[in-house]
Length: 140
Image (cartoon, rainbow, N blue to C red; front, side, top):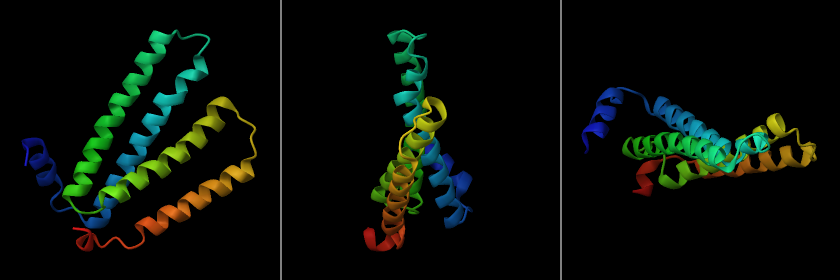
């Protein structure tokens, strides 16, 4: 175990499984928001930002995303609160949700909201099925 991982373990050794699941989920949500923001948010100012600035902005978002994502997935795996596949599923669903939100808030897209919301609900149902039985022992 690396010193930084040992520090994180020592810091959270008395944290319940439910709290660890919440912290991992929250961190993955922040990471997903940062990645989606890095992907598309610079397009909001495409007439004012040159390619170099857009690249630097996207890279800064992606760098922060990697910090959150790596920390959360290693912590989640170390504490055995989610499997790697479950954490990947959470990242994908959060990414879909934040793509929808950023698209509506910053770009004012007037697509068919009903179809998009139904799609998000179906994705959420699929995610629930993946996360339904979270007994990590049978995965190891």
